[in-house]
Length: 96
Length: 456
Image 1 (cartoon, rainbow over the protein chains, first blue to last red):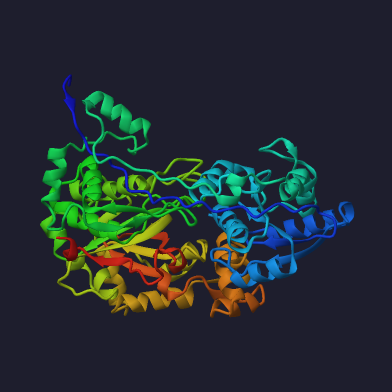
Image 2 (cartoon, chains in turn blue, red; image 1 turned 135 degrees about the vertical axis):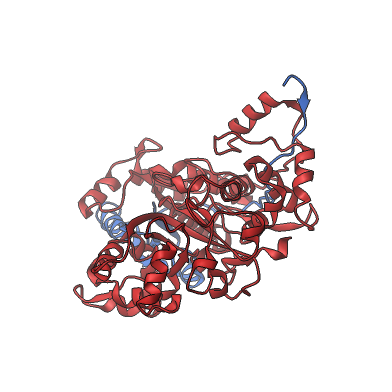
């Protein structure tokens, strides 16, 4: 048991991670439209409605719209294009 | 698994559409989210947390979450969200954070005791003793296949929106050695690995696996399909299933609670992934692999995902009522794998079920639950409702059904039948289990029954 032995690593080959950039920050919130995206997991719809109502009461300078992601397990390019065209930012949830 | 998807969609909005996006998660997933963001090249993505759980919380409780603190950052949740949208972004984060990792073929030589400690500390084991994969042992294992050590077998990931790790024949052999497998088992283990379906899935639902072996290889390896086949009574059954688990966690980049594994309770099935051979010779029906398109003389392996099981014995007078009650309490998304001792299979055959498909049809037609209860399941709401909303039948019709209407618990494609057992008892079970949902396979058309012969 005192001699040294050589063994193979059992670990697989990870891919190279490519950097993905954040979007620039907004210069202000006044007058901006934020899409509140219900990704579709249970109770996320209620959460986004509550968030919309809270923002309407406390942050009236911000416009909001609740939208639903088409399929929580897949990209939704149509919705993403609409958010880019009609909005300034998004809040997505809920990861649970 | 939900948090990786929410992170993934936010990353897409940020990087591909130029839209600042804050992802909101339950705080139990904060470490998982950190690791998902790191391997997606956006480690400082905008995010905020609310307390766990979100499920079943009332609107007023959710309002309380919004007005309360982000439990991870310790600051008001709403400030975390809104400030994230206007806080200046560092130049490095506008580019994203790229990095590369390499894994050595050989570890630094050390004593056996130190290496065993290293493997445990690195979480490369299932915490049962392993066989150290020395070069000699791995070379001996590789003699079990004609395939080259550097041939790519496939890719694995613990959950969606994580990176796919690649692996070779040699890497599978290393893990097979660790599990205590014999070289003759390697083609079966390679076939399992080639499905690219992990035996260490990160789902919060704690899914395990079931592996069914068919064809001549069962006899060549002396696999158990009789008395105690699902128990710890056979070297091939035990170590093939264990190798599946070890190779999954090591070749996909880990299975660590809190970061790459999120099963609430975990699953004891994962120790050897319920690995056994179908008793084709005592079954009145077509073998499982033939049902899925392979030749009777071909050796094959089928990989299912399973969650739990219910048990009963014999048919007796009220078997239909009993079966409907037994299965009717299970979950609509998770499916059923009926695992029958040959005694029960023969009894059913004598009752008129001449083919497995007839039994599958019976279960589909007769095991029904009210639509209201069908949709009152986490999995139904999160995994079936999406298909219904996109008009996919029969789920779209189920979604329109009145709450009291009885609808089938399962579609036929997630009802399976396997015959195994030593006929000391008319034992049978329904494993809550199914093939991996096509939406979560590496490619939607990837088969879950594959040839072993291809890997000889």
